[in-house]
Length: 251
Length: 209
Image (cartoon, rainbow over all chains, first blue to last red; front, side, top):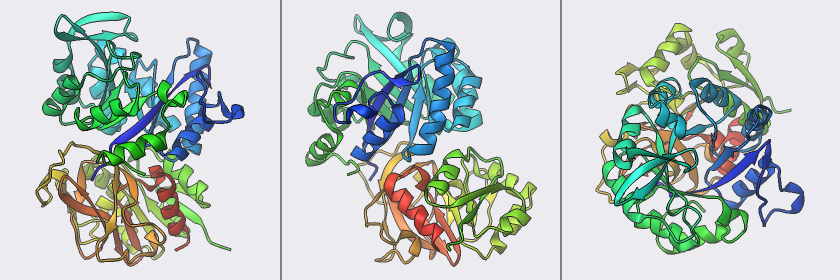
C-alpha cells in the first residue's frame, strides 16, 4: 500500500534557512543541507525547499545549494519559489532537483505547465495553488496570497491536471497559519474530481489535524513548516500517531 | 580491492545527476557514457531513465545499445524505465523492448489485480513496500533488506509478475514486479537513489555483486 507522505518545508533566503529547528543542535541551524539531512534522518518522506530570496545573488546561491542538496540527500526534494519560466525550471533540473513547484507563474501563463511537463515529465511538475473562500466560492490568490483573482479553484485544479501537472499542493489562505486544521471539504472534492496526488498544506496545529486531512480529506501527503521547525510535533511522534490511527506511513 | 567502476548509460533519457551522486556515495566510481567500448570496460552497468518507453527504446536503438546491453556479462541494473526496457515489450507507445526479463509492461491500472479500497492515482508516486515473490528474496541485491521495507516510486507503467520477479509491490490491488532478476541482469522499478537508507543498502549490494 502506498504510504501517506510527510513533507517538511524549508524556507531559504540568500542560501540560508530562515527558521531554526528545535531538535537540531545550534551549529546546524541555518544550513539548509544539514537541516534537510536532520529531517531525512527523522523519517521525512520528501523535502520542499522554498527560495524566498529577493536578490539576484540570492537566486544564484540557491541554484548552487540545489546542487549540494542533490549530492547529500537521498530522498526526493522539490524546489519552489520564484520559478517564472521554462528556463528557470530547466536550470533547477540540471542542478539535481527532483521536482519543481510553480504557482503564480502557472496562473499568469498556464502553458508553462505543459511545456515543462512535456520536456521533463509530469512527475517533475508540482503546481502549488493558493485560494480563499470568497462568499462561498473558492477563488485563487497569487503572489503569496497578496493578490486575489476571479479564477475558480476546482476548475483550475482540473485544468492544471489536464495540462500535465504531476501533483497539486493546495493551501487555503484562510487556514494558513491559523493552526486550526484544514478545509477537509476542499480536499475531499479534489479526491473525487482529480486523478493526481494532492499535498495538503497550511493549517495544521497538531497531529490530529494532519491525521484528519490524510484520512478524511484523502490527501496523499501533508506539508508543514513551523510545527516541525519549532519542534511542536516531531516527525517520529507524528508518524507513530498516524500509524496508531490506521494511516499507512513509512516508519 | 573491490572493482567498482560503474558505467551509467547516457542515452538522453532523463537527468543522471542523482544516480551519479548515489553511486559515488555507495563507494562506486561512476563513468557516464553511451559508448559500448567504454561501458564494456566497466565492472558493472546501470541503465537509468525516466520518460516514455518507446522514445527511450528508440534512443537506445539509435546508439546500438539495444543489442549491446543484453550481451553484457557484468552485473547490470535497470532503474525505473531502465527495468521496463529490459522487459519483453511495453504498452507505452507499443514498444518492443530488450527481452531480458519475461515480463510485459502495462499501465498500472491495466495490471490484473484484486479488489482494493485504495484509490489508484496515476502516477504511482511515493513510498510503497516490497515483499518477496517466492518466500525469500532470492537475489543478493536485496540481502539484508527487511521484508516490507519502503522504497520510492514514480511511474505510471509497471512490469507484470514473471519467473524473473524477485520482489513485488502492490498498489490499489494491482501487483507488479518491484525487482526483477535474471542471471547477471537486475532491475528495480523504484528509485534506489531516492529511497533513503534502504536504497543506499541496495546500491551497496549491487556494488559488491
